[in-house]
Amino acid sequence: MRYKLVCFDVDGTLIDELTYIWDIIHKGIGIDKLIVAKAMERFYNGEITSREWAEHDINLWVERGVTKGDLIDLVKKLKLMEGAMETLLELKRRGYKLAVISGGLDTVLNYFIPDAERLFDHIMINRLFFGMNGKITGIEPTEFGADGYKAEGLEKIALKEGIRLDECVFVGDSDNDIEVARKAGLGIGFNPHEKLSKACDIVVKKKDLREVLKYID
Ligand SMILES: [Mg+2]
Image 1 (cartoon, rainbow, N blue to C red):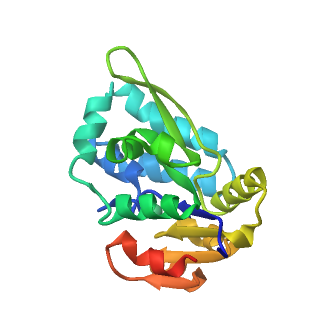
Image 2 (image 1 turned 135 degrees about the horizontal axis):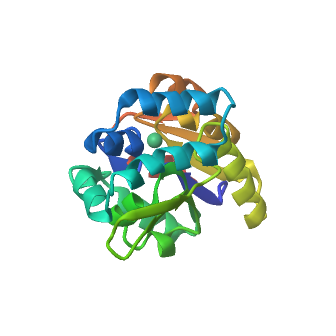
């Protein structure tokens, strides 16, 4: 086997019908777009850290008393990517380590893949906390959700596994996957946005995750 670990993005890769889950929830609960855009801009300008950015956005939900049930109602209309479970189980059967590096939310990943914690050897994602009444109380933000930082995340995972970056495969769809797709030994763009497709070794243009299996040896 040339590769030893396969790492997936979540939003738009393992889960279909979305680009960024944060946008869906902000929109679904009626958060002012400008407030959200301003925080994002401050992060990309280096004025706030990724933790501060995540905490800022999550506070908008906490203030409104958003519950786990509200989140699930909003994500119900999305679906697990076609062929996702078959692909993950087949890679596992072949002996690859599996990982997730995402700027999304654990609640959403676990809704679509209830046994995610067992299936994946490494999960880097934002983790939400809920109170007794189901209300969101806070977040443990991932440091590795944004472009550039995802590449750092993969480096960290490779180091833990004692493997090289060129033994890692990364599968993603969006602009925040560019650097990590470049750093991985094999970068697969899965129905990728235009900028990402230029950074990838392989581009898959079919909404079926099983399509990636033939490139992973
Ligand atoms: Mg994505």
